[in-house]
Amino acid sequence: MKLKTILIYMLLFVNLGFFLFLSPLCTAQQANVSIKEVTVQLTQTRPPVGTTTIREYKITAILHNTGDTESVNITVTFKDPQPGLNTSLIFQPASYSLKPNEEKTFAFENWPTSLSGDIPLNISFRPSSPNVLETQYNSDSYIYTLHIGNDTKTTSTPGFEVLVVLIAILALLFTKQIRK
Image (cartoon, rainbow, N blue to C red; front, side):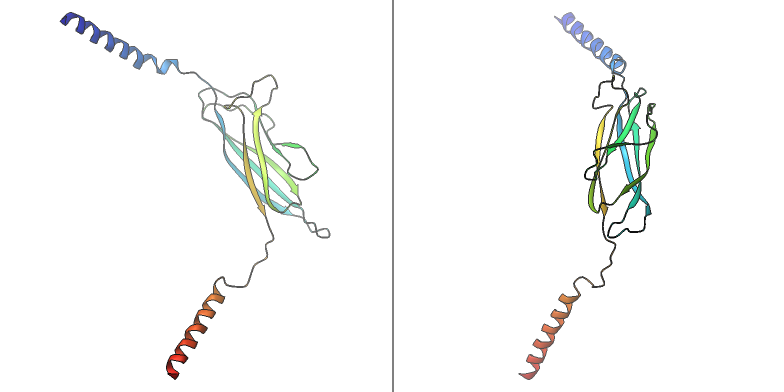
């Protein structure tokens, strides 16, 4: 009976050893590309034509390959949110393959727009070749909300009116107390 338990323990330890040593060798290798950062920068404001002001923006997206193999060629695009335009604009470089643990900056230099308010920019990336199957590891999208508003500055101090009303009430109460 004692020999059986010793053999069972040895078998368990040998299996545990195989699992610990062979498990890192059995992991699948793949590229895992993701959007690390998106920035939008105003580059130029054109003189207004009537009531329309055109602003030009530079949009950059940084992609990062956190996988352990080189990615397929990736193209970064964004859908122009202007009404009537149903186009996808391509960032430069048009197609790029990321090595493991590599970051690459894709840029769209001059995007003109007359829109104002909160504008959602849908930035996405996918394989350049139509023959490559899109997966969660080589394609994704990111929504960046660009706020374009009037830069008019207000001259009123928030809460100032409340302070004036409180001082007036206190002054009335104080004078009423003195008259008694």
